[in-house]
Length: 281
Image (tube, rainbow, N blue to C red; front, side):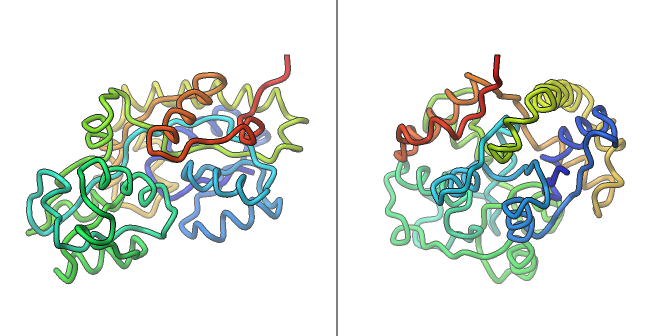
């Protein structure tokens, strides 16, 4: 059983599960993250796609989880009631983010510090769930928010709301990197992984292939997976085109994740070596 979020970021995983066959992998799309996370930790599902920082938090809390791949490097944008060119334009204003410790919250703290601003002083921060944020933006009751797809595509046609800056662009501007940063990770339980090395290898192979297909054929990929989402086809296509994919596994995955956390000032210690799945020889 694979659980993945109701986001275009899940499309490569949907295609990979389809390639593996229903007798091997069944995928369920979730909108309630807390519930899906709890079900995974309780053993209801064997594979979970979620934000990388969620997996790191699980591991810090002692959960026996491992990361087997990451494949999304950009899906979040700053959205505001005025066009903004930098985080400095938000000085004195409030920026709405999802829950504290979320992937978006984590990297926004880094961006704010690199801009030379003080968190929750120069830019005030409020934490609001995505559906509520969308509603408040539509009503003009908040000024700015960081939203991932598909919420960006759901709001971008709204008059008076501007999609201003991509988080991948911010990352590249502040770090000089050219390929974004790992955001969505695929997690497994360690004991399950030890007994299913061949399946994990096959899954990684199919996700890698699916990422290549989605990058080259986004509209076809959206059409093939439309039934998994409660979104209009046009919104799904738009959201998928605005999502950046890059497949990582094995040593490159470990290197990229360690580099990301070192860059944002929260390096992973030696205790994290077991967080990274290593296929047996």
